[in-house]
Length: 263
Image (cartoon, rainbow, N blue to C red):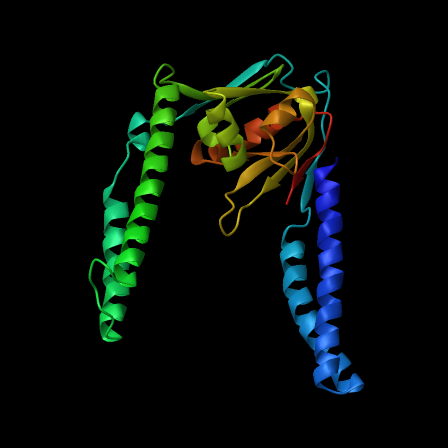
C-alpha cells in the first residue's frame, strides 16, 4: 500500500465531508440562500488559511543534478562535517520535570480549595493528584531511558561526523528527525547509511511550528526502513550543517538522480 497516496485521498475525502457538513448545518439553521452564503464565507476563510500555508511551502528554487564529469570537483570523494556533540547533552535533568509538576499541582489544588473541595486520602482530588504524579514519573523514566540509550550509543564513537561520500550519506542518529531517530535507537545504530540510489527526492524546508528546518529525503529500497509512514527521512539543519550547506548541496548534486527543491 502506498501510504502517502492513501493519506492524500483520505485528506481530500475529509475535506469534502467537512464542507458538506458545514453547508448542511448552515442551511438547516438559515434559509438556503443565507446558509450557502455563510457556509461559503466560513469555508473560504479556513481554505484561505490553509492555502497560505501551502503557498509558503511552494518550490522556490530547483537545483539540478550534474554528472561527475561535469563537476569542477570531480576529484572529491568524501566530505565530512564534524558535529559539536557532547555526552553532556544526554544527561538526564529531573529539575524541569519537578518544577513543572509542582506548578501544575499548586494551580490544580488551589482551584480545588477555592471550590471548597475536600482534600484527603479518600477523595477524588487525591486520586487526581496521584494520577498526575504517576504520569510525570512515567514520562521522566521513559526520557531517562532514551537519553541513557543515546549516551551508550555515542560513547564508543565520541567524534561525530556527517559524512558524504561517492557511495551515499552516513548520518549520526542525533541529526535525524524523530521518526528516523527512534528507528535508529531501536536498532541500536549510532549512525545510519543511505545510498544515493535509495534517494527518490530531496527537499529543503525552512521549518516552522514544531517542525525543525531540515533536508527531507524520500527513500526507497532497503533505506525505506528508516523512513516515516510517509516514506520520508528528515535531516535536521543544525548550525554545523547550515554553515556548510552550499558544499553539501554541491556534493549531493554529483550523485543524486533527482532535483533538489528549496521550499
